[in-house]
Image (cartoon, rainbow, N blue to C red; front, side):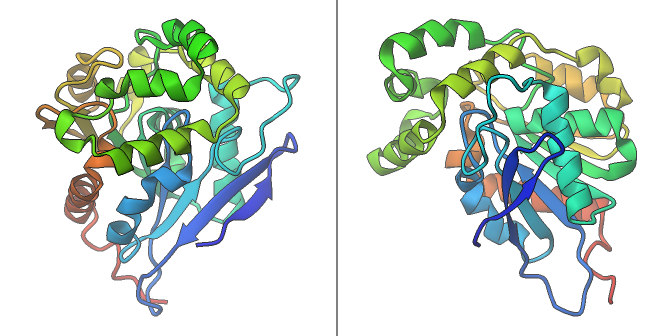
Length: 276
């Protein structure tokens, strides 16, 4: 779908995309898809066909990523501002409540909305997404990125993201090219900020239906956090992809989408039946 843009309250252009192949006589619920750090909405392309038949799917490029504007250095970059962008997009699209599917860093925003604005949330679906990156390797990435360049750094650490059986050259080249399209200076700011954030103590405030999908061989960050999240969130389900590496939404997109749809059908069986 062609991109559309909105301007945030601090005058940053945010790109987003809407895919809706639901029946015209129904009033579908909206599902927001939020990409990971150093990424863009394009990376979630393979999940869209599974979801857009039942939901109005909105994919947003986070500020400084993809086709969204890179904000000037003078503007503060915080998790709260990124979450505010998402809330402003909900208001812009006149969406009262929605489902939020977040991959890794995109799941941070899903969690923040569920914690601080529960009235806007139907459910959250978290794929390889923990409550922050404080116990991850983010700070150690920065000097490596500065020394080698973003693409070379990602290529050297690709085993953290993809298991051997999913490292076909075409897939990896496309992945590296997509990541490298982003502004490196902004990504460093983003990584450093997220490396100081962790909100496990707030996770129990999430009351909506929550799907947690964990890569079984996670090596980026604290893999034990997924079990703790499941214990703390009352209405959560935990799925573990045994042997999975961090970027499950890239190389297991069909499986991720199928599990998302199964969860949503069970929790919201009437979501597509309302008529206009």
